[in-house]
Image (cartoon, rainbow over all chains, first blue to last red; front, side, top):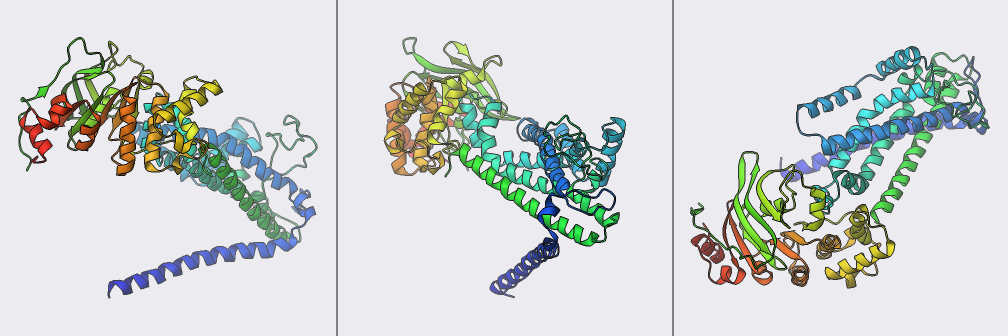
Length: 295
Length: 267
């Protein structure tokens, strides 16, 4: 077989593989949207769920998903930023560092059910926090940390060494160089990592069933004091998320239209993830342009 | 096969007490782990002159230069004395960040920050506590003029530094260094990534800058060393072999190894 023929065949095969992947993706998205969207209405998006049957709207769950996401990110981004900076910049290349790296990898391969049960035993039972947004957010942080830390470390390491030398040669401290010069350049990569992990958090159900709980008590959206039990911002209230709701409607739901309900909720979940990704990317690009003065 | 030269036969000039010196090293040794990269470098650099460090790749000239503002910290072990204003700045107790503000450095590849042209210059100034806007603006103009870049960029100070050409970027890096108002400027092959026209501009800038700064430049390019420097040091395999006024180095090299290197019949 000559080189030209080999190239042609390889191109065809690669194109076929890509087409298959794209095809599956489009089919899945289209299927979920087509079967779900017709059942989505304003009252479904904003309404409350009947606690017994699981029927009714998903307003509270939708809010819970976003709130949990924000809370998780508030906890996990600063921690993984610190860990990522440490690993990329300060850690010496020795056995201790490789031990930390292996520990992070092990953490990332933990099944989410195990993380959920751990969160249940530690936060819900032992610390008596109960099923709550905060328990859920901490459990999700466990999951998020390895992915985000790895991503931040890699984004920082990808920035040329000559940028670090430039900062140091001007008498800037290592820390100032890292925060003021390296981090802005690494920002797009870090935003990508945050978006990816946010998608995981949004879609996670197993770890939340035992931590954030399976009930979405009616909350008063007029009350924004996080200390009030009925406030949507209260981090100590149980909070069923959209993904958990979909799982519950399908397994325990007593509503007649359970199939339609979960189809509609799935469609909403997918759209919410897409919107979040889009928003995070726009924000990331905007920030990047601001700090680097590129157009 | 490389010719063998005796490391004993050297010709290194010293200066009498009347010459005011910018910096001086005594017995400077650099080790990369077990690799002894620089042996016994005793060099003195007169004030307000350009000193060129020449030699083949791997001769240790960049390694030596990077030791002078402690950029080898954490990379290599440097022993010996580095005298700067009667202080041995190779002592572990010395504040290296302070030292680097007095001894600036420009690197082989232009490495402007991914920020605007203005921000490239003011970032480090601000980090060092200079907050006055008018004064910062003044420094921007002064340093860009000093690096002969002002006329080309004065209308686009807010544009990204990465949109400049390679030669402009390198002059911006020079401007960024002199904005700190250092004493000594170290340049590590500043023109090796530039085209001939940009190279000429950088060289003209350096000749202008020596009135205010003491400059030490590592270069591969012997013509460049001949054009810009007053003193020239030749490095070979981690040893300083010859250090003489540039005129002497190129017209009448003192020892066989320099003669061969200048004549291009090395090995």
